Amino acid sequence: MVTGWVAFLLGLGLLVVGAEALVRGASRLALQVGISPLVVGLTVVAFGTSSPEVTVTVRSALLGEQGADVALGNVVGSNIANILLILGASALLRPLQVRRQLVRVDVPIMIGCSVLVLFMALDGRIRPWEGGILSLGIVAYTAFAVRLGRQDAPKEAGEGQWGEVGKATVYSWAGNLALVGGGLGALLVGSNWFVEGAIFLARTLGVSELVIGLTVVAVGTSSPEIATSLLAAVKGERDIAVGNAVGSNIFNLLAVLGPASVVSGQGLRVSPAALHFDLPVMLAVAVACLPIFLTGELMGRWEGLLFLTYYGLYLTYLWLKSAQHDLLAPFSAVMGFFVLPLTAVTLVGIAFWSWYHPRRGRPGKSNRSALLG
Image (cartoon, rainbow, N blue to C red; front, side, top):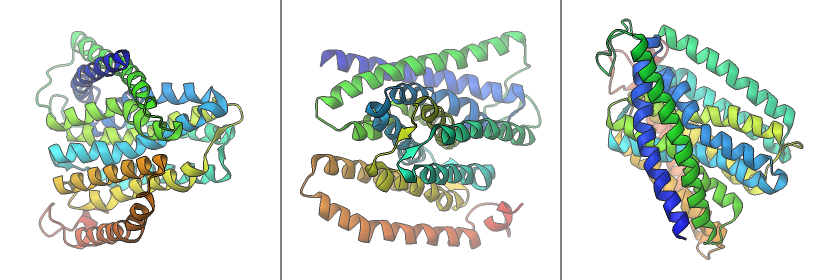
């Protein structure tokens, strides 16, 4: 037990240090390279902080049927945590400004990838050739995001929301790359220790492997995203905070689940529980981003609290189901017949209201006009 706690705490410490270095280096490189900070969050930071998901998911997939639940649960649980937990907590700390590119491009891509994975999983297995399609998708997305980001880049190399960076020199390049590399290294090592300690502690409670993958492993491998986005939100790096979460979800579906399905031999098995509940929840969470992001292109504190509340309800359901608790039936009934429908109606109402009654933006110009250019 002591070993588990030591690994858990040491991993957490490395995550904080790594996140600080990664945000600082990536934000400066964004201005020097001439790519918008949002795209840095969607690509470099998102890919880097998702490296623990790659390691854990591929390693689990190589175990075959034995590790399938952990592999799939890690990706699905991480995507749910990235939106509900990470964006929710970040917005609660400081309201997040949402760029139009996210609303028009990246969130729809995230939703499309979620639909594609759910469709591939309908037969109970994501085949190696389907994993190959997902793997090719991340190449196309990265090229598209970088090209789009150059069009949105700051007009002057030394200007941006982080202030003056100074003239790019060999030493500044080396220093910033060292920060990014060192930060990613600390995040990778820290997350591995964190996951090892968390899994050790969770298994002492007798939790199933799917639930471990959806919760402990998912939050553990998402801990770099959590640390990075929270720190970015506190420092005012809102593009990185939002882009990191959305970009990580796209990366998890394409560049994590794809290769894992390829190397697993017979494909990645999808359990009935994941197919009928967790994958639809992942898709629903992705879709919920659109009306939230449309509210004046700002995710406020109350919306962050709403996301955090739903993440707590999701974890409660998983715990009740795993324990076969007597409260599972009434809890599911209340969620299915009252809470979820009410939330859906509220989100649709928010979307329509913000569409025609913008609370932010240029006077006399609605969000609809702004989004349409």
